[in-house]
Image (tube, rainbow, N blue to C red; front, side):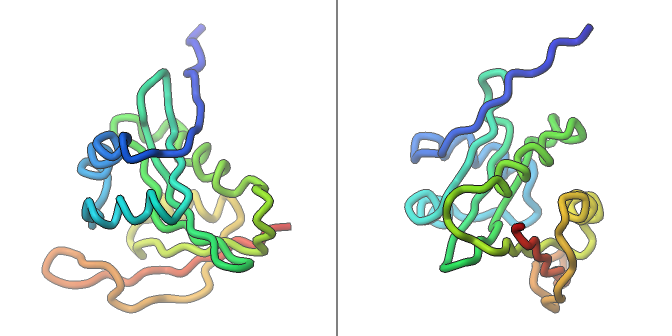
Length: 150
């Protein structure tokens, strides 16, 4: 019988930036700059997903009044397809005492696996941002998706 991985979560610190950038370099189509990451570590909730002692993913959530926004989420490509993205997303959706009534996110319109994950957790499409993401020589639309906390 295969042993279950040891999964834990923790808040990221500046010392984690190298691990975050290593994941981003492999997983992100439009990577954030080091400055964007430092700003996020100072002003947002950055949760790390640790699997068997190694940082395997991250999620960045901003809170403004009664809304939360999932700004960035990624899992190391070598560990994708194992349900870790869903586990990390569930952690972001857990009640956290902020009084938030909804969570928003933008996702590339062509990222069907992410859209399927978000839908499986109760997110619904609320709109489109035309040409929101850089994509090769052009731009790609973003879907705005919303999750209503119960």
